[in-house]
Structure formats: structure tokens, C-alpha cells
Length: 135
Image (tube, rainbow, N blue to C red; front, side):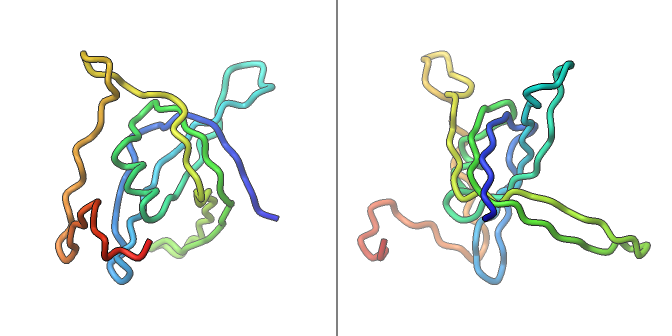
């Protein structure tokens, strides 16, 4: 069984990219998770990857410092550098992202939202009320 649940704060705003072949959104961000029994306050910094609509929502609503809960799985990998060294990676692939605080607020008291991301070249924006979508 490969299941992980984390609660922590974003160390910076999520970075959103699109996979060209499948046009899937991918968001990457790092979560600072406090170590509960440490004598001095310390944290682990864990890379998180989210896909699809979850990735787009993360990029739109999450900002540095926001408290979030992540449920997902650990995935490891490796790659070779230009100098031939092997580097190993460990990331959490998020199946579920919960926004646990309201984030920054505007003067009116409403949560601040980032503007909707620009539609990349080769993509078409969908209307939210589009009845042709099968889900």
C-alpha cells in the first residue's frame, strides 16, 4: 500500500505547466511539513505534484504560506546529470488537495484569487456551462 497524508504550508507559489502530448496540466510545489517531536522547530520540505483540474485549482488558489492537506502516493525516480551523476528524486503525487485556510484576504474580507491562467497556445478555453462535456 502506498498512501501518504500531509499537512503543511507552501514554500512558494505553485508552478503550472502543460504536457504537450496529452495537454494535461501539471502543478509542482513544495510543502513544509513540521516535525512533531523535534526539540527545535524544524520541517521537512516535500515536493508535491498535482495533475489535471486539481493542478489548475492549485495554481489559481494556492499561494506561498497557505496551509493545505495533501493525500496521495510517494513516487521515486532517478535521472543522469550532464556530468553522468545519477540523481534520485522523491515526490508525492497528489490525488486530493484540501485548502485548510482561507489565505490572504482583500480589504472587503473576501479571499484573494489569482486571475484565471492564460490559455496556452493550441488549447481552447471551455465554458463552465458547456453541455457537450461528458462529465
